[in-house]
Amino acid sequence: MTAPTPASAATREAYPFALTELVEHGVDVVAIDADLSVSTMGYQFGEKHPGRWLSVGVAEQNMVGIAAGLAATGKTVFIASFAAFLPGRCFDQLRTSIAQPRGGLNVKCVGSHGGVTVGEDGMSAQAIEDLALATSLIPFDVIVPADFEEAKQALVAVGHTTRPAYVRTGRPKVQGIYSRGYRFEIGRADLLRAGTDVTIIACGIMAGVALKAAELLAADGVSARVLNMATIKPIDREAVVRAAIETGAVVTAEEHQTTGGLGTAVARVLAETVPAPIAFVGVDRYGTSGKWDELLDYFELNPARLAAAAREVIGRKR
Amino acid sequence: MLSAPTVSVSVDELREIAKRIRAHIVNMVARAQSGHPGGSLSAVELGVALFWNHLRCDPANPLSPDRDRFLLSKGHATPFYYAVLAERGFFDPGLLGGFRTLGSPLQGHPSMGAAPGIEMSGGSLGQGLSFAIGQAIAGRMDQRDYRCWVLIGDGELNEGQVWEAAMAVPHFNLGERIVALIDRNGIQNDGFADDIMKTHPAEMFRGFGWHVIECDGHDMAAVDQAMSEAEKPRERPRCIVAHTVKGKGVSFMENNPGFHGKAPSGEQLADALRQIEAGL
Ligand SMILES: Cc1ncc(C[n+]2csc(CCOP(=O)(O)OP(=O)(O)O)c2C)c(N)n1
Image (tube, rainbow over all chains, first blue to last red; front, side, top):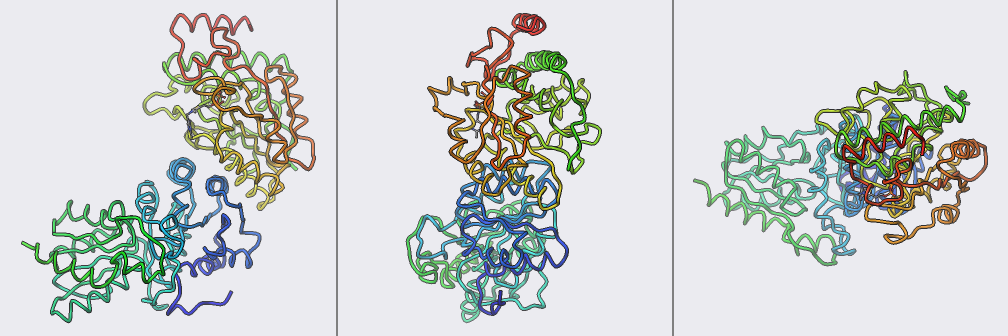
């Protein structure tokens, strides 16, 4: 297992490194895959720690049940598949076997190939519902890391809690944002760029897109703050409130439908605290095949759309 | 190796215990005016023979890491399950009176850890065998020799997840650690299994690589014997297909799909208790 260059790596590539680090920290990890380990990268952990890795075949429901049984004996269990199938194919099992027992068993779900950037496989593989499903599971933490470094740290962080969690990773190699010095914390937003006219709150691959949008806006004299909100649940309420007070308008950006994910969570905080105009950028239709970067444009998950949304929402300020 | 079962009682005594369990079942469901008597009454001999003569457990130490696990996959059979746990000493039988009422640990379907002995949450069918695999693999990793006994309904066998798990048990060589118990009462929620969805439990499990033991699920000696047989070492995992009668012990509930999930009236309760006492 050779470390990828964090400057340009897929978030999914962080998975085996995080698991290995947890084992080195003394965490009693067991990881399970369902015939997609070459994609989730779980196989690399299996090669390193064969006694701690299981392959259960194409059987996501069984995988969740096995994870529950392992967690009930005190193991820290990671399960992985495509985000389209985990949580999609086994939601009821996640609810009754993981979320409900004893306030939530110690199982971490890693949905790889999240969002539309899975690419050529087309709409059936493009998960745009996983965050809505995962955030509805009461004890779950839900995290969408922006790059390799953040993914590694987030996976290690959830491995050190005893709560269930859902962490979404992505397929394409993306430009790194963070260096080793970064310190991820569950539930804390990271300020990527200061700004005063509007705040773009993004997660996952959209964090990098938001930075580019902020540059476009700056060229027009608009000062956009960019927040990386990797943790969707529990959301960093304070950062959202500050954005509303200090910039007066918010755009959310996610590679997910605009219902049930980041946008919904941010809107709720605003509604409960400092109402401010908000615009939602996401994917509200089923898609098509294509290369991942073509798909970002096809779905308008691009800097131009974010900049337009920012201008529009600024226009709605009182 | 694990120690011998903590109690071992005669078949006659087991039959007396079974009567008490049946009385609890109808009382609990009647008091709550809701619950599942049919599939509870069909499983009584399985539960009694298991908990008194085979399951290596200590009710005073219900979380001992070495305990054998009983996993109720057919989670609606809580009247039977809670009554067995109470009679076996896991908790005060007085708790049974709160079954299905506000704030009681004894919910309509089991909530893991809510009362001593409740090993797994249930209610959504098809999940118990998978859970057992996780427990069994953890046992192997931790070098503990406990066994998991999983009670599954024959209607429940319609769920695909059961077969994902049935495939995985031999694959992971868990034969010494998992026993499946099938309550073959021939009735599910909507009616007779042969009409709703025909299954062939013995052939299906054999096809998935299991060693199948069939028995009359109400002949206490036969059930006890089948469980001893299931404990013998052999390569294949063991599945006991117990041929049972839904509603067993109460004439008007026997083989009657209407009593899958319905409570008896006050009059019916008195009649049921008389029949159970007479051991019909
Ligand atoms: C996933 C799921 N679907 C549906 C139900 C509703 N349900 C409860 S019991 C039952 C029938 C079960 O039949 P069987 O397994 O034969 O149980 P038994 O006759 O032993 O009581 C159904 C469909 C459920 N509990 N879980």
